[in-house]
Image (cartoon, rainbow, N blue to C red; front, top):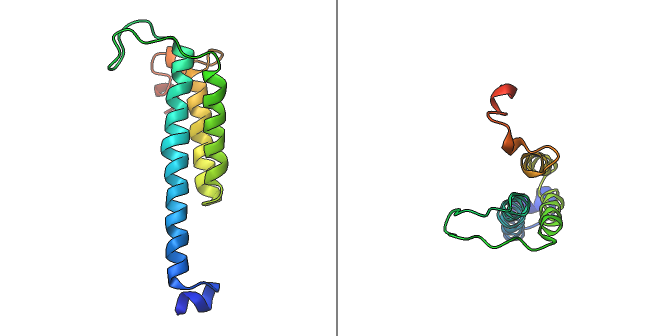
Amino acid sequence: AVAEAIVGHSERTLGILSWIKLVIAWTAWVLCLNGGTLAFNSAHDRDEEEIAYLIQPPLPPRHLAHVSFLLMMAGGVLVFLITPAFGLVIVGCILMSVIYSHPITRWKSVPDVTGSLT
């Protein structure tokens, strides 16, 4: 009753909205950001030797880098539905993922790049 008086929604409605936000946040973080980052990195690595569970990893599909970047961006847009602060955190993660893997910047190829930032 208090919640309904304050924001015009019942406690049940607020509970449902909380679950919806949780599902959006999980989808953006796990599927879009993590999945997109892994795919983006794979697209640029082009591993030929054993990695993780793959003895001979296949070549990445031709458009994997573009599709994975779009996936990360979709996650970035989704999280702004939760809070702007969460959105900014995710956008920062996307930028670091791209800087880490993209051939132009390729933080991954520089030993201890993070040590120089601290």
